[in-house]
Image (cartoon, rainbow, N blue to C red; front, side, top):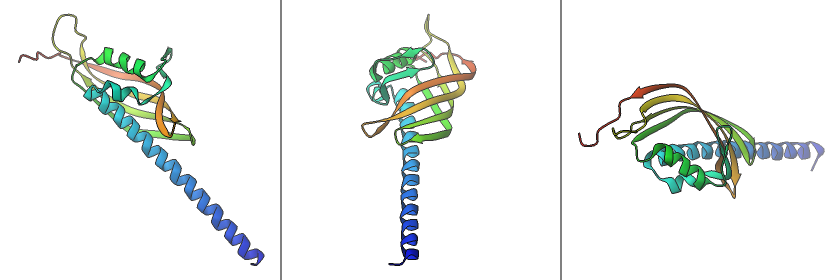
Length: 164
C-alpha cells in the first residue's frame, strides 16, 4: 500500500469515527427529548412512580431544593399538583450536548392547572415560562439532574366544580 493510499484510508477512518460521534450525539439529544416528553406525560397522568424514575438520585429543583432520590422529587410534585387535572406542554428544546454523559437543555413551557372548587384550594392558572435543565446518563439512561422552572406569566383560571 502506498503512502497516499494509507493517508486516504486514515482519512476515511477518521471521517467514519466523526460520523459515529455525531450520530451518537444526535441520538442522545433525541433520547433527552423523549425523557422530557415522559416528564410532562407522567405529571399529567399522575404516574408518580414513573416520574420518580426520570431523575438522578441527587436531583435539584430550582435553586436551593436538593433531594435524596427521584421518589422524593416526585412526591413534592405530587403534593403541588395532587389529583388536579393538568396539561403540560414543552416546546422548542435547545439541547446542548456536553459529553457522552452530560447535557443541558432549555424548554419553553405552558401549563394549565385547575383544582376542585372547594375552600382552601389553590387558584388554577395557565402558566408560561422556561425550564432550564441538566441531564446525566446513569447506567445507560438519560436522567434529569437539575430542573429549574422560571415562570414569565401566570393567568388565573377559575377552579371547577366536579359535580357540574
